[in-house]
Image (cartoon, rainbow, N blue to C red):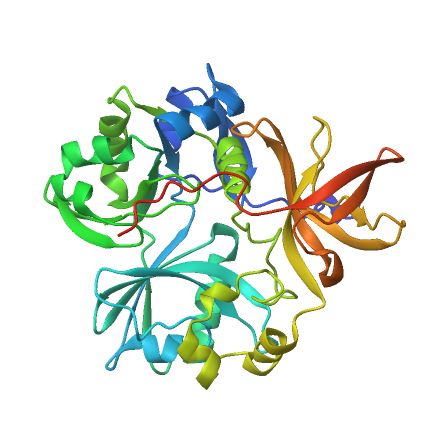
Length: 380
């Protein structure tokens, strides 16, 4: 009899668990697979809509431990090497400052978006997306590995405390948090261990991300959740919050076929980099900066109350296909559907009229300014 094992489809690898997995179960998290991890999409008692609005009004605690954390060091400044594969100015980054940037392939396509923090003149701290981290770290090793050492911090959790009450809550534990500005970082000691704080996040709200040694992550999370302003928030609200804030999600708005200019992220390319180039895909990207791209990421406001979902085709008023929705849903804070997508540049102006086909019916939409909500960041 032939061996039946040969005919079985390959089993999916088991889902990974973050250091907070047990806590999510205790808190009534509804778990779903995400980027290879078992993650909470929402929690019992609130649900996505209430979690979203709680974060906008008070403070939400998110488990983002699935993200990839790494340290880049070099005999010389590792920012020099990193600048060959990102379009942002890394050597211009001062200690304790951070910058959002993009990892590029040789055609100027986006391998991932990431946060880079300067610790000192020989050390950078990177946070990359969960689904991309193995690929990202291999790419960095392969392309600039002779000039830098990359250490993946697999033994750390990452929490995001987001919302207008985040400063009040965190400064009870770490008084220096109150003085921090948006896109700055600090190291603090908690129960004898080093934590990395950054005043950043991906919700459009003020807030912090906190890198914590994995063994103390649950204890630290419980201490934050003990404050009445703080509730646990799942991936569902994380997505609706970032969509209202007009923030890209890798694999939706960004991928290896899309350039920073097409993604409407040309602000990540500082003046010196535009003048000097010297990064992957610079020729194509600089040409698009000069001449304009053929397509652009835009905000889209559909008429009516029904959301427009990812993958929906976008048409001109005359019925010509001109693009596709990359993210869409209902915006609880603005009380109407919100979406982002790519359209031909001729239709990318704010207020431009578009239509999408929903179940065979044309639905009017307009190009809307991003973000859909006013960001609440604490700047200088």
